[in-house]
Amino acid sequence: MPNPAILLVSENHSDVLEEQFWRYQRDYDLHTVHSATQALAVTEQIHQAGGQVALYVADSRLPDSHVLKAFHEWRSIVATARRLVVAHWDNFREDSEALRLGLAKGKFDAMLLMPRGVRDEEFHTAVTEMLSDWGSTVAAPEVDAVRIITPSIDAQALAIRDFLYRMGMPVRTYSPESPEGQEILAMLDGAEPKYPIVRPMNGDPVCAPTVHDVAISIYGAPSDIDLDQVVDLAIVGGGPAGLAAAVYGASEGLNTVVVEAEAIGGQAGTSSMIRNYLGFPRGISGMRLAQRARGQAIRFGTRFFTGWGVEGLRLGEGIHTLETGGGEIRARAVIIASGVSYRKLRVESIDSLVGLGVFYGAAMTAAKEMEDRDVYVVGGGNSAGQAAVHLSRFARSVTILIRRPSLAETMSDYLINEIEYNPRISVQSCAEVVDGGGEGRLDWIEIKNTDTGELSRHEAGGLFLLLGAEPQCDWLPEQVVLDERGFVLTGRDVPKETWRDGLPPGNLETTAPGVFAVGDIRAGSMKRVASATGEGASVVPLVHNWLEDLR
Image (cartoon, rainbow, N blue to C red; front, side):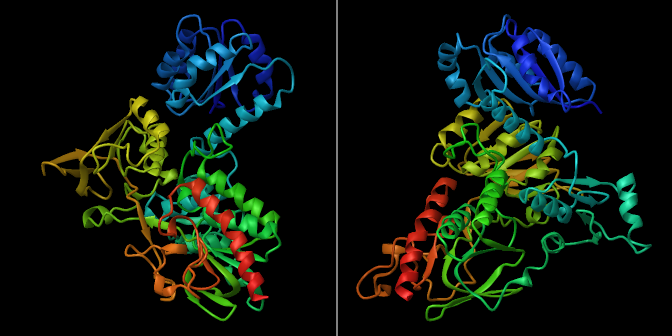
């Protein structure tokens, strides 16, 4: 198979672009054309030959088309390619102003100044980030750290693959008949294969594992926790709030551990592209953000224990104990950052097909299998919008179903603009899914109009359910007071009768001394990545104050 392609499109500056992009020619096929029409013809040739276009690099001024119209035409053939506008210095101020609205609506991914000389590393940093994003969300990895052998992608295989993706590990799926499959089957020494079979990083293959088994085979059993040591700070949950608390806590000298039941990153780790997070003008995927934060926390000394959920919290005088299936962790301060799960649809016929065309959350690795299918996304929040945009790169159509009259109340404006522009995405308001089914996997869904009660049946190749927050706080003791929806109360929101010495707890402190709550699990939180990281950072001074009081 040929290398993925990079198309350079410019009438007057193609020599400059060719000179700049020569460094990519080992891994990508470079095509230089001088007009939008020529680029369209090359795109069709690549597509018909079964190739892929990774990146379009288009001059802000083309001789035969407006650059945004050209992107629209190229995207109709290759929806997955990233789109970069480069403007000559003489035109940059005028063209950037004219194209600003198109960038806000998602008509292209980035706009850069055309390099004026060699080693313009700021320019190439942007290019490599775009190629990296394309490679992680579209292309199969060239080198796989983990191999999954299975005759078909079922719910179990998909859950494992999604977990590995969120942990930033390159993974590929092979059939048992493939050379790679035969090689791993031979390692079973004649034992009856039970699928899926997972072989992590040249280790021994594991038959029919759970996500928990895979985590142990890669990272080791989490029961290796040092049970004899009392740590300063134990954080329950490795989402944005927990990661921020870990970075700030460990960087300020606190002996810090993070306990995470699943993959680092929480719900945010499933987001294909977060565009409104401060400091990332071209956006960043939730997985990359989480893995960078994890590496940052480790650098300061944080220890991560993944694979065991916390089953209980025993409060003590100055030392609290977290109970997990792998042992106990004793800590002077505890931060609850366990986030929330997506609320269940609770339609039996739909829930019986989870993993078989029905997915809770974005299920990033399932998107590639939605090619030429009609897909439905249920939910009106940012996560649903991000999932719809990502799915539109593969699916024939994506329909967002919401109960409200519009997305305006629940979704960020930048996402609404991008959705309105995308011809593959439509929004159906006042709608809910009430039934669905199929032979072995989802084939159809039934939608109810909440205003009229009218029912309609639709073919569906995929159903992605992002229905809002549902807290999981059954492991907390009764001393930690929750609101009527099950979220953790903090600060002045706690009942007055639980105040100590006539004063409310600190802003992010719960009704249990030395126990804090941040992020989505906290009652009244904003349910945004940036606000979660802000709370994670803000809670650390409160932890310091608590530890000082203990001393």
